[in-house]
Length: 505
Image (tube, rainbow, N blue to C red; front, side):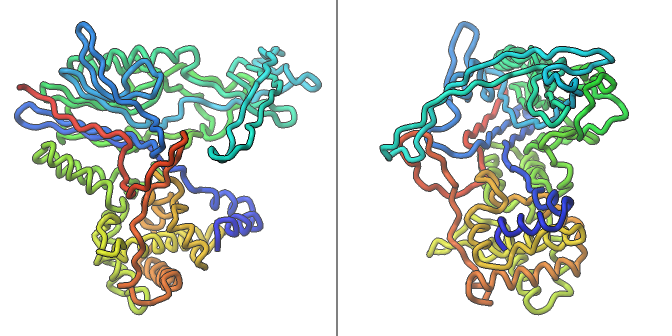
């Protein structure tokens, strides 16, 4: 029933079921898009999605100096503007999430925990002892509890591959970073982006960036561009990049991918660009990183954004951009992609399954529009229950724990923000749900609909779908200072939003 019970069932079911039960993404990220207009104007939007806190994580500022007029946002203390605009160019970023580091399993010398073998030789780790002092904050800012103060000594070691992060038996695991000793390159590159006078200037600057973020820009000559910059390892052939490499020397990097070969485009023929943390190109892999976008296929959230941007690019303007943002931030991302499959399942449905499918297809996907009593369309709760039930059915052949929708306790967690797990994308699908929406047959979707009907009817205490209405959801806000932020309605939007039109005067 509850997530804790599901996890316990998974542990009892075996390692495969455990792995599947843990297979829920940590959703987050940012989105951006750009479009060209025939009169030489270009449009760019960027919305970093970092969650809402008080105080905020981002700072907006202007910079004026000889030859420089720049406005945008940065993290407090950072010496560059990461997204903004000057007199000629607007630019923005989103999380790239490419795998730019690797874990190496170092073979330790028995009896010598700070020695390892590399290419037939015994090497000493570079180690030092550090004293770490700490002062933990009280759990309640209004309490009088004295914060805990203390210190501890730790032994920090590096191998030829990088810092040792973990040990197990005669193995030490070291992390190799592509950006090691090249971190400041990103600050230099971003400073050049902020001073760019054209999209071509941005491309030159992008090739100097060492971190991995998606970068998009538009200039006042009507050009737009996209880059996936950073230092990307050329990994050893013949090894599974999802697993740690042996540290003994036979699985070393073959260098770094040349910057000019990193994914990029200027003025695509379609006339627009969009990114919501999707992979940058066909065939791009995620290695052992956290990015698993490819698993969602056409049901990854960027599909909805791309539909909207495609239509926006037919007649781009600032008002049209504002309308796009409202739709992208108030519609459950996978719902518009799934409607054709829902209609096929509806044709053979009867009873409670038909009730659920009828309710879903009568909905337009909005979780923003409310009735006078502040409740949203019945499709909101029904959609959550349906996609979770579909995921249970899809994972059942693999022995995954479930079902998820068996009692009110779980539904309360689900509706309170457990599904899918972060305050950034309350209505985005998990990988299991995206797989189910794309692969279940019509009969299986009808079964999911029947299971969802039972769960939602129990939760609301009625089988009447007109009464499956819940209050409009709000953000789970964080307080870093003494003040508590007010409750605000949930929109799948950036915490800083930049809408810019550039072009000839």
